[in-house]
Image 1: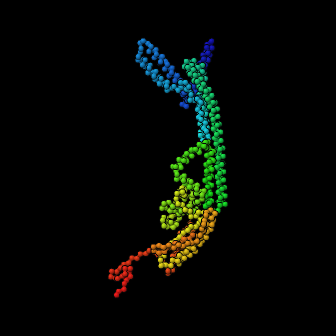
Image 2: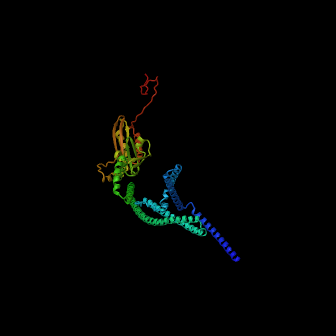
Image 3: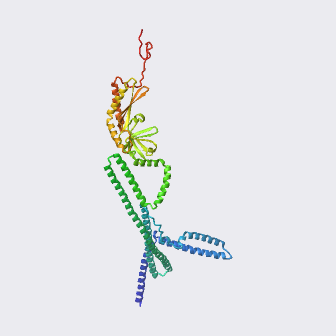
Length: 523
């Protein structure tokens, strides 16, 4: 009998030992689960705790309010206690306002369907950036919902594990504290499971709506990319066509100036065509654009008259052909005169390289400057072209003054012969060019031979010799003719060049003279 009792106590001891080991194992597992649940980044449990705090504040506030009502209804009122409860009630109401957002739906911002903004209208390539940003934002919102779902599933898994461990612990230790904790954990699980179901539905609805919106945006982006390719190909075709026209113009047009002008025109038309291609491809309301441009052009035409006149002048120059690149031109603006070669004709101005000419010698005393002449000068300023329609020569003249007692007929003949001989080449060129101009202009006289004119002056007779010379190098031939004529006049005894001279004479007081530096004969 004693042996049986001993065995029974040994069994009880071993059973208690096993129970103690099992409890220790459960407590360790519980500590590990609680540690995972207590992480700072567990937003679901934080919001649930805030919800729990709100309910506690609400319960305590209602309790204080009932107690305050009871005390106020008493005949013998405890004013101190009433005042204390009133202050407590105000503090609780203030705390409740802080947690008011957690009162109805503590997980609202985690399970609520994100707002889908208006789908962007992608009508041009730049708007593709908006479309890509829209798609990216939709995917980020969906990813945020999925992250919330993953975090919630992890929390529920840990709560399920904790609930199971608490039940095992409660089976070994029937304490009220464990029962209350089991109840709190179960309430937390049920609340979070409800949020999980709502979140699952939210993700499904949002994914469907976002996929539809993304599909529309992708379709628009695809259409714009294809449209951009087509527009680019059209612009490229325009560039290639312009390049072919340039090759044809350089091959079949012999005049380099004409080739340059044609190429400029081709470039202008090409750029205009490309701009129109892009405008008509991406402008939804062309009529509205035309109306706006009409009013804008009227205002700009008044405010920027000179600019628009320059553009019109460029168009007139381009169409009329009055000036070409390489022409020798003369611009007069007030007292300023510039003569040089046209380097470029842009939409706003003509670029001229000033050359050494007789005008430079007499007026400017400097040359080699780059002159920018606004195109509107062709309407308001004296504009002369020395090489229009292929002309390469101009009339130039030199003047000599001989004394009245000189043989002026002989002098004029000598000057005319020298000018005729030295300018013969340019005279022939001029005659041929004028014959070509008959097809375009009415030319009554084609006399291009050198001419000589005699004019009386105060100090003699002026001989004016005119001849044809190179419009690009007038000074060279002028200098040569002057040298030849002066040399020929000096060889003639009866031809004297008249020029102003002055003599300074020192008169001896003792010497007798006639007042002109000539001594008188002494008697």
